[in-house]
Image 1 (tube, one colour):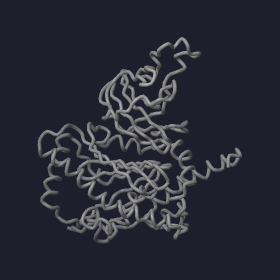
Image 2: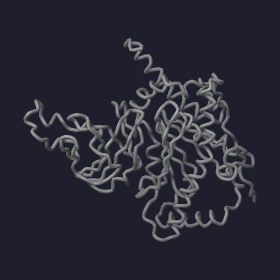
Image 3: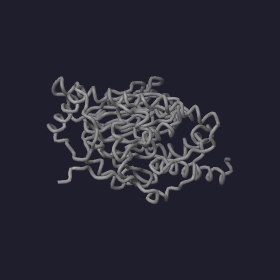
Image 4: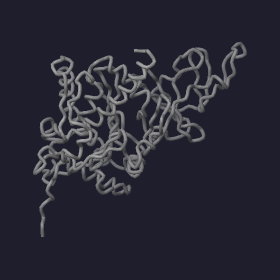
Length: 400
């Protein structure tokens, strides 16, 4: 009987040649003018992942999210009719932000400035001495934000969507609906800020070329045999979105005692909750512009990168769990999973910032990408295509 693992075959150059092979301009990763175009072309006109429905467990639950790239504060809530709604966190009287708390539960929102009060459907319920205003209450409701839920994930759109998020994802949406994340009831979260452009930061998590060098004792263990760089088995493209099928190294060493216990307890918890999905650890979904979901043997985790400026970003890493911890062992396993994820990420951060400093020096005019950095090239093509189209719009209007 043949007990050897199948030979790994890397993605061929001709399979991704349609993406192009030319180097890409380095200035796109630090030029403030390019970043200003991205604000409108990419983020004003795109669906941004902002939360999960498990953060809104019952009517009256709300979360507040800041989106610096658009200078926006968003109020996302579950209203009394169980609908997920989103509004600008802005009173329609004089623009005062309504909510300062990051999360909470209430059915009405009162402005601290002049006590205008709004319902969870955004309507203006009351305002002192409103008869003195030359406007109807119906015209003073909170400014709505488009919101859509896919696999339990909450996406918002601050412009006028050309299509819904689910529509743009095509079959990827149905695939994600089947994953544990769609049933998650709680989240472990790790937030960081980094002195690097959002694209440079995001790119680090779209390629495996660096694993054996930056993560030799952690994620780099996935490299080996006839796949020394741990390249994916295949890449997929769906409109502006991307996927890859993660390769599993058959020669991965035995985990440490601590890791082994954690993996075992997570496995037991998943089996108990009927969440064992064969091959789930091979999933990687990159949703435009800056969200990705990655499967691992224990649970799924997401990472979203939010731009702050041309050379500063904020990242949010989340692990999703179904059900409460039933014992100390499950709690330990979950905490270990987050700690391991955080430790791997720490190995990335300094080298990303070093890359940012190098690019900002102006020493490079272009960046070269290889075959197995296909997701990076597709990502840049999608971003730059939108930036150039928006720039052409402005030029046609005489605004540039």
